[in-house]
Image (cartoon, rainbow, N blue to C red; front, top):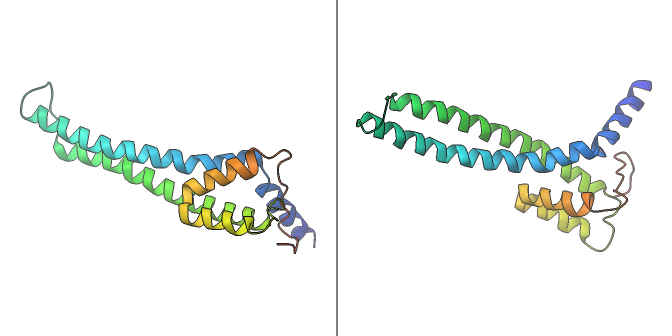
Length: 147
């Protein structure tokens, strides 16, 4: 019995944690933007390496080394963005389902659809509009029967 109370309290406090909400709203976008920059870095590195191999500039490194080094960074950023994005997606869908402020007409449905269809940007705007700008912030009770 005590173990269940401890888990219940921890989950509710976790979903209402301001820092965690901010991290899960901002980090997926930041990682995605870094992955895009890394993608362009792959091509810049390849063209720079080709230029050095043709003898135009300084020391040369192999094209494969330049490509694989940047590709590993790109793959790491994409995978981190993907996994943190999934955690963020589930977190904010649950938050929108249990948010006590979303009671007017179809607000809850509209926000859930926005999160589903515009994913990272929907999550960011939900956090910004429904959590960050609300005073007081909504306190979500995960274990209430009200939806």
